[in-house]
Image 1: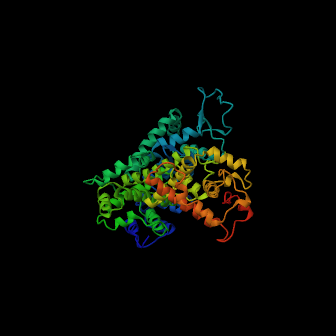
Image 2: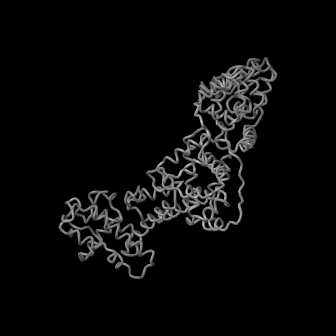
Image 3: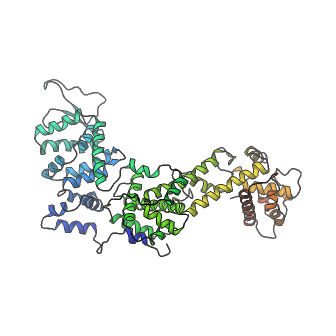
Amino acid sequence: MNDMHHLSALLSSDSSVAVSPKERMEMILQASDSKEAVRGLSTVEFYDLYHELGPSDGAVLLEYASPEQVQTCFDLDLWRNDSMSDEAMTEWTEQLLAVPDEQFAEIWNNIDPEVMALYLHRNIHLYMSEDRNDEVEIPDDESPNIAQTPDFNYWVAYPEDAEKAEVLRQLVERLYRVFDVEKAWAILEGMHWEMATDLEETAYRFRTERIRELGFVPRDESAALFARVDIAREAEAMRSATQAELYVRSYPIGEKLAASIVAYDESDSKECYFEKILSKVSDTETIRIQLLSLAQQVATYDGFQPHETDGFAESFALAVAYINIGLEYASHEEDDVAVRILRRVALKKLLTLGWNVTVEIGRKAKILISRGHLSIVEDQRMSLLTGDQRDCVEGMLCSRPRPRFSSLEPYRCMKDIQASAMCIADVATRELFFGEGLHKTRDDISLLAYSNDIVIGVENVNFDNIAITVMTRRATKRCEYWGVLAPDEVPDRATILDAISYDSLMSLFESDVPETTRVALRRYAHQLRDYVEESWPEADMRPEAQYCQALLIVEE
């Protein structure tokens, strides 16, 4: 990164002494008052330490945890978008069942009742008779895991999954053991009559407000980062912004980000214009806070949980990439304009702009594909492209467009965007060459490939080798140059190179073409020349017999 580490300097946490999670836990547990030491951690610090230790080692912390610390763990771990995960709740229930009765009671009495009620409501069914002496009627299709509650008021049908059923059975028995019968009965009765949708909606609403206070944003709001905007209008608004309209709030998680940023700075990524401009900005505190929040929002949108550090590192890199593209696009890489934009425009807008630039290149690729001119093979939508071209176009067609399908690397800068735009222009030029220059259609190409029994297979027929064949036959004055050359008809290398010159390509067009098209056709002629030079065995040799179909059928 040209020895620029402004992101690291800006965002890395200040920890002079590295202490392992286990060492930190031991220090806490060896304190004179372990309970006070554990509860002295902020809720996010507790959450981080618990996950760094893992559920097995972190379980001991739960014996001293405050209900608020446990509630934060529930808020950050249990939800997948706006739905509570039963699997995650089962894992946490197992952890709670391991704490002493007094601690269990304190936690149960002080966390959201809707969360536990929803978990019970989803997974157990209660049956009772109106009269204690009457037989309880249980449907035939009910789970076979049925047992009575300790007070004999209910028959409880637990899930068919034996392990999950055991966790829930222990939970019900724990309620009766820790609380009096009347309260345990009230918990089950209340759960039984509530609507699951109401419980989940209420729990999600309370959870959303709490995570906001911690600096987190729910997924539905994170989705706003990827809203569609008019990129030209947004860029102009950023360039002409006269005053800062930034709302920032502190963000508590720093240690995970530090590791993510170090990994980013040590990567082989392209030079980052955003990082370069950071070195020219004196007051970067608002940028720091925004960037931390945006990285978390991208991670949330992508479905990563807050403790999944690998995902967070990926999301941080993605946020920086889109911000970088947005800044390059809006400023035209004029440094003074870029500095002014960073001081006045929210990073969120730059990220959204950068994302939309990549979406626009993806839209152009979709238009290219939708015309249906790129394949003569039924189960391949781009058989007429070379492997490199297919890789590029397939990458642009991804739900999150990227430079290549074969690589998971996102677009990082406008040079990446421009390379993809050039790929689209090159493919469109090939369409133009056949459609406007030769007046041939996709069906014509297909007929040529299939009717001439190309032995290597039509999958290897692409615009380039067909073009070379056509231009070679034309240059050698064959009366019908829309066909395949016989082995004894292959001219020498110089003749073929002359046949695919720019002037030869242009001679096919009956009217003037725009200058941009001329540039593209000139580039196409150079690409065909490179193709021939790379494919030809030696400068003074003719191709071997297998290539005698006029380079037509040079295998990829």
